[in-house]
Length: 495
Image 1 (cartoon, rainbow, N blue to C red):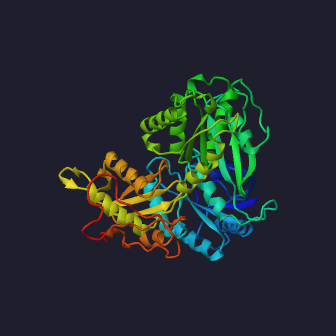
Image 2 (cartoon, rainbow, N blue to C red; image 1 turned 120 degrees about the horizontal axis):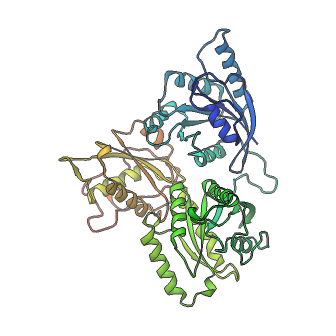
Image 3 (cartoon, rainbow, N blue to C red; image 1 turned 120 degrees about the vertical axis):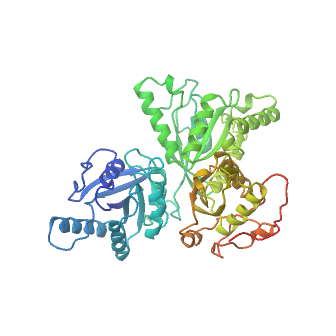
């Protein structure tokens, strides 16, 4: 159980977030500031985390005996009771002097703080999100409490910041690897889960639609805790008419949102149909790691030829997931099952990748030398600096002159080059392009390191750039982008 205080200045959406996490409308919500005055408590759940929530009044910088001052003392009591604080700002308005004042108060109290940039739907909150780095609480989590966007990222932040709790059944307190098993009806999802855990935990049969709820099963794989979630079959939206199936579909989509790795199960006799492609696209848009699984492989005669054809179909129909793992198996007999979990672990590791800023900027120098940005209105766009802002999925910010004029095709070239240069096949990669130089390079650079060692790039451009990565942390190294052309630049990286 994690006790969380939701704090911030008035009218930033604290009560809306409180209601969203509680799962029901408990706190009054209105456009007028100051509706909440007293602390409000509720139990909530985010993913597999049990939460004790405290809604607080908007912070006012006063110290007398007025109503606002008494409301502020209520907020301070909530902070004293809580394990951590969700510091909410309005991303559309940006960071205000009152936000800065409250940030100073939070630093004095010494509690763990997660910075939440609310109202960040669309692009209206991009500027406020970037400005929030200056408050000094690390990477802000962009959400929309009203629309439920960004909750998976908020879950990751809370899970990382919460106090460690004893886990009696295991020696370590590492959270379980969350895996959602999804696919069309009757593709063999429940049979696969039963085969993995070695028992008939879930009902199976030839009838489609046996599974209705998203069923969570805890499992141990080679000493690693795993939480498997079996879901109802997903059909085309036009075919979903019954209320119960709508609820089951919503539950399955929710399981995708809170998973780390998604296993997309397909019948090997009819793989990559329209609905399979739509599910894969949903997983990519949610930013989850993906593994394709072809079940009923014991029914296939030309196994090698069919596997090659399926891989080519996946790369052609889903170029944004090119190179995602493809595992062929039979859940009925267990044939090929030993290849599934190593593929899941590899996809999860790639999804969690962190890259040193110096390697990123060495890569950027090589990428633009191989393929310079196009001319727009007679002027060339000049990329200046790139840094990773988060992992899971790997997310990068590129600072460039005339950023708004950069074409989508050139962004795709950069994203594909990142995937190839840093060995991230099939991993969702996010790239945001912003104007100017990086205003918080030191903050980002000091935090970026990789969990797995990579060979240093052979090109001269791999020498340390303007960033300063931690020397004790291994990192993924840059490689020259694919295609012809020199792999060793004639000069070092631009500063």
